[in-house]
Image (tube, rainbow, N blue to C red; front, side, top):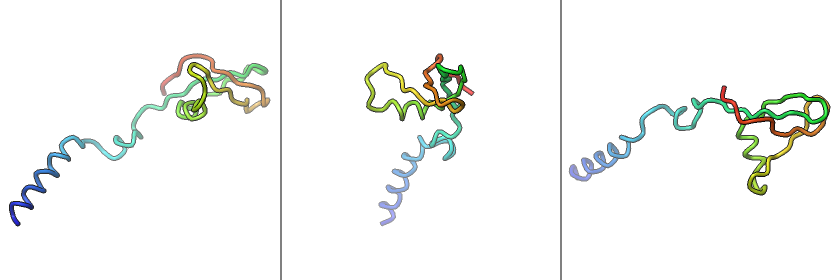
Length: 87
């Protein structure tokens, strides 16, 4: 019985070796926020959109096709301006 407990403890210790850091690290909460600038074709308004929103809106699109959004100022069409910026 004691050998079984020692064996289980060794197995748990092996599993926990690679689990360094906090729960926030594991969930990616300490990663830098990445925003992609979108510009309105009608009024020129620039709106930073989080990259995860762009990823979600691109799901199912053709490769290389970028999603478009509605402008919060004039309800026009917004398109990607440039490469993502990290904040």
